Amino acid sequence: MAYNMRQINGTDPDYQVLGGIGSGSFGVVTKVRRLRDRKIMACKHLSSDPAAGNVSHVQRELEIAFKLSRSNNRYLAKFSGDVAFNTSP
Image (cartoon, rainbow, N blue to C red; front, top):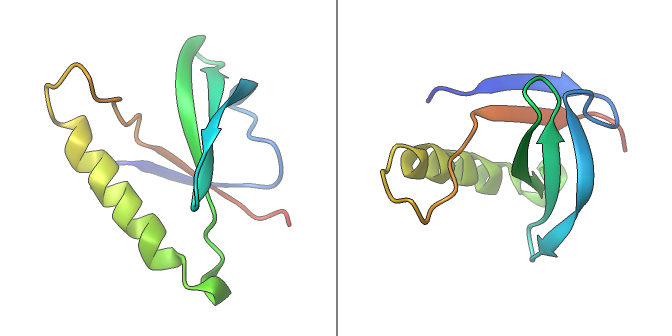
């Protein structure tokens, strides 16, 4: 899988949060602006608490996002390949 994994502590310095889009049982989706190119994107925030057993769910989400990003379907959101793990509580 080709994605950029990095660790952050608190707010992600590479993105500006513009507002909420929606939420579900495993996460929240927000509208963000990537600061390096000012591109508007959707960002999915997933809970990955190892004690809660969510790590395998996060791995599946990444695999699915990567596979779908290779599709030429214009109705699917593309996966930017950027994955950040937040270490702040």
